[in-house]
Length: 485
Image (cartoon, rainbow, N blue to C red; front, top):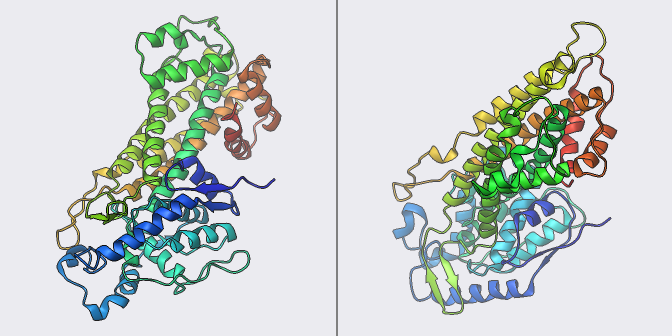
């Protein structure tokens, strides 16, 4: 079935739109006529403004060269030299989904109408997204004050100086570079924003799946729902905790009393208090991303309506970098609870089963190794949780004396999502096995019962000692399905 078309309008595009477009190659992309009109008006406006006053990057140099005027004789080549000199990305090439996300973000930002850039740049990027032709851009080169290297490489591709990757049919026709287009095009954090949108989409789905996996583990250890009672969270109403507790009540289909314990371990009892902040951090990241995706953040900012132009620092991505750093730390804490719940699932005192959910011969290992694998992935996540914003840089002869390192934070967050997925998958494999061995089938009329039916239908039912890598891989892919329970 064909994917729905994504409309880029420079105003109402969200991170879910960007992630969906990036991960569904060939998705049709339409540009809103109103956005194209805004872009065209800003382009005409800046052409008039530049004849009256110095405009950074158009008739001046950039960075510490901002005080140097571009000679009239060099104005035609100034933009091309800027693109060539800034196309200095290093390291591996960015994966295709990240490049598609970057193109979508940059096209949408142009339609916000602040760049003063020819609308044809947005049209060419939309065409590339539809045909599958992509620029080759390097991952490394940005520090959270604009993806200058990646966008310079993209700009050179758009004007025909660098090749497109293979796609369907002909690649976009080369864009004719006008004086002033170069800086207007590269003054954006589009790659970082696109990477962050992909990371947010992964983590938002995994956080939803965590509710389901936790509910399955709770049933596997015969835990109670008292920690999720509405009165508990009305007495300390942090929004995330309230939301998480309500979701557990929904999944379980009503209250249930623990049969053997006064209260359950922290992995269950404190789940709303620990997972709730991660849910809140994801919501904050979504809000920041929505602003960034639709922002006219280019320096300088052109406003066609009043014929005004402002030099500013709106390209700086401190807000995004800090939101991503916050999200990873919150994710680490909820991952700690997943490994804590996994430890309860292999404990006979809590399940009534053999150690490590083993079966068959005595001293069998069961799922013993999954604790090691989960904690290995957790260790990777712990390293990735280190805040990128703790870095500092002074560049361009001292005139650019701060950086937020949002680019590094975005890449860390993508990797953190992958590590968290493995931690949670190990818990899911163990929870389903424990329920099977206890002979407990959750009520199919409840959401958690429906989730169990899906998971048990996909996960291998064999319990003899055998390699479990395939089980975890299956569980990792199941998490996206469980997120919609």
